[in-house]
Length: 115
Length: 113
Image 1 (spheres, each protein chain N blue to C red):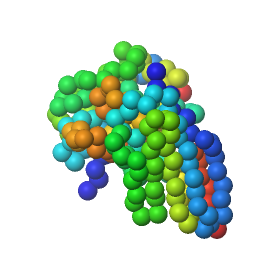
Image 2: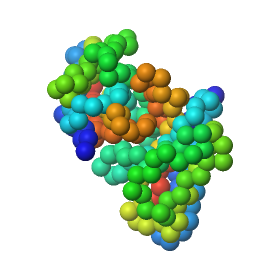
Image 3: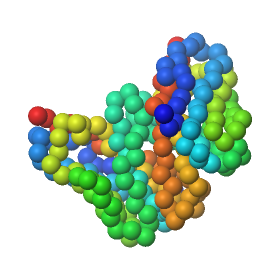
Image 4: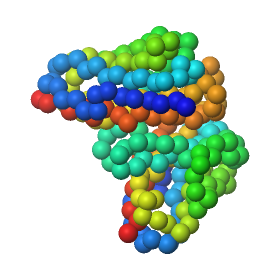
């Protein structure tokens, strides 16, 4: 009965490879997000999708491409991985905003290590 | 540009003491403010959300206050327990951005038995 799930939990790969991280939510939310947490533990938003449409794209290199096949899924594909891409990537979702009560629910994170 | 700061960066208290965690933000035009808890190797758990029109929210031993005009929020945890050991993150949703949360760097809390 996991609310927001991500796969894989750990990902170790070589520079230059292409990899994908998957995210699924069973909360019936309309909006999903990808965040990156770097080595200094700072969380920064990367993308947000609402009803499968991109609404936030925060100056992320175009090697990162989110894909939302349906409302419940938001996958992150990364091309030509670089050392600086090593981080923990979190997926989140939220219900439609209603009076400012749009709590975001986070997945467990995917720790990506690029060698 | 909104900036979110959390002080202190780390805090260690003996069990039973009250915890006071501070969050400040530079732009008072916020939609809401959330406090999260992050355990090592785990995702974030939402603790409290305060809407911009509210002054505080309470849940059990947790109480969060919001003073928008001065750009501050405080999270109080009463009678701390070792299970409260975690990193606490404050995040604001700017009023002009749809759903985007801006996080502080967090306060790492250790409660010693």
